Length: 267
Image 1 (cartoon, rainbow, N blue to C red):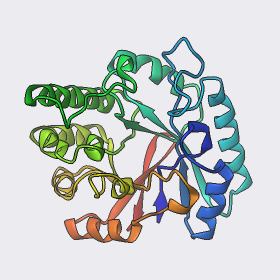
Image 2 (cartoon, helix red, strand yellow):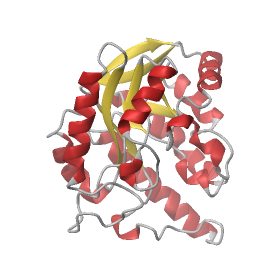
Image 3 (cartoon, helix red, strand yellow):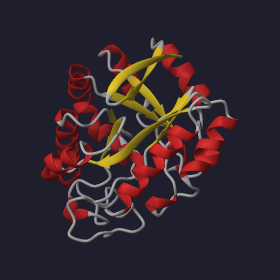
Image 4 (cartoon, rainbow, N blue to C red):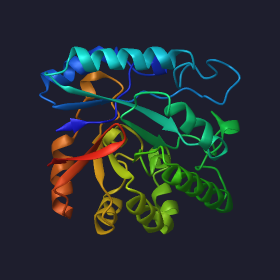
């Protein structure tokens, strides 16, 4: 059992300290825990432009130092992997890659929360948008994901169909592109995250949908697990169901990363 997607209070919308997650993971018997708070908006001229979305730029060093300390402190009780959940912005692929190269990061989860750095907090409302606008937004989403897969610094694609959070029909908009994206991930060794946080949102299901998990197996895409916990109590949510589902479609292992290199754990 492992959990590679967690958040804490630095991002402004989660609860608990990093150490709270480590201690809870030990209580639950996890051999591996990944810490992956939202990375700063490195491209911004402001240190902390969106206080309720991500940590400040200057806080990133402190976050890394604390993660390294916890990794050492709890060695022998649990393996703490140092990660980050990063937005993918096509305009700033090189910048983010250069920033992450400076730190002892085990892996990066690349996720799409917004399709443009100029559109933070101003995303398209799919519920009122025209069909043409929805199709265009879905295409932008796909192009950004391709850029992340090709970046060289993304090890895991987070909540692949995440925009269904507030618009469940986004699954259908993404469907024509899924096989192309999965083939690209398989070719580059980028893993697919099974993220269980969607059960809390309007879609009421994991990210990605079951049919995408099936297609991922068909294309031999490595998979991993993340609860996307924003509170220590949510660690490993639905792990057993995810394990059983992965076994059902033919997976026998999940992947994790040390120093950006993949390792496998039996289910």
